[in-house]
Image 1 (cartoon, helix red, strand yellow):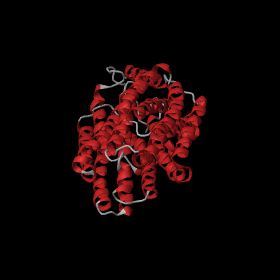
Image 2 (cartoon, rainbow, N blue to C red; image 1 turned 45 degrees about the horizontal axis):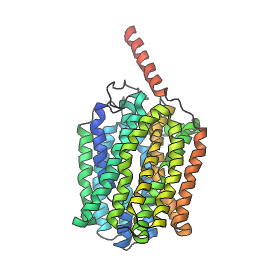
Image 3 (cartoon, rainbow, N blue to C red; image 1 turned 90 degrees about the vertical axis):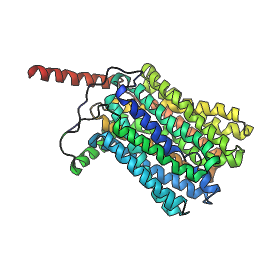
Image 4 (cartoon, one colour; image 1 turned 180 degrees about the vertical axis):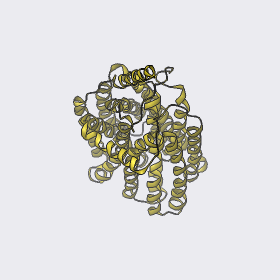
Length: 434
């Protein structure tokens, strides 16, 4: 049975529902732990562990593929079993397989075990964070859903980027990269405890027994959605495009900025953290503005065009003028502003299928995971062939394709509010009849 939609809480601050506040805090802690190694892992594996750039890029590519699959499953599982259960299970899985990644992979210098453990750990991250997106789609004010998603991405950025990048810049010189990576378990555990005990927002209604057959039917229905509604396919494509530069740069730039351009590792980590520091504010800004000026318009002009320009600047400015932190920092700020302009997609997708919003969020999550896979894959394919400059140009060109695609996108921003009003009206009639 498809879950019904409960009335959304009326009190909120720019879409921030009080019942979900601890969930946003949990996301910030969890993503701090998950992102703690992202800005230095590739450089650490190449420089200190002696692995090739090809091996490292393949590690990130496999990770991204697993994230994409798990991201899709997260929406379906959160709808079917409930977001809280999924988030708690994800916490346990992350801790267990991160310990395996460190003990049997990194500390044993065993690339096969690193690949295996890192890939399995990749399942946990989207289950936790995107399971919470499903929770938001039910519990947040429906007429301010883009704003509510802006809060989510702000919390995400605080974790993965601000603390996830700035903390290592101070911890690595003091305790080294290996102990720093072990320390991420602390943040993951705190995030899981907060999600498991303190979040109280209304989620999807779970009725009847949970069976594998029922889960299979839900999964099949979700897979069929973009074939029935082409607008969902357009939205998925835009979400894939959204972060391809981000994930491509995670693979390339720790090496390029430090080895080729001449930044110190500490400066690079602080510059990369600035991307996320900016998005803490711009995620919320674009969420609120998207509700007012239009979701598609925000993605088209500020997301697609903004990312095409800032992707080029983020590499070519330091490549031309050298390790100038201030000039590069300006490009980083523009990059952070532009990448956040895709936030309205998190509201757009459920609005395209208001009666199947869990499935729509699952497709959005799949696309977010594919963004990581595609970004890493582009590096794997293009970096050795076209070099850094050619790879960056390819990434910028993809954003221009997204700009063209945006003119085919149509969405009714009032769809979720209208659907909620219809449910309330039906309940009122049922109560009157009783």
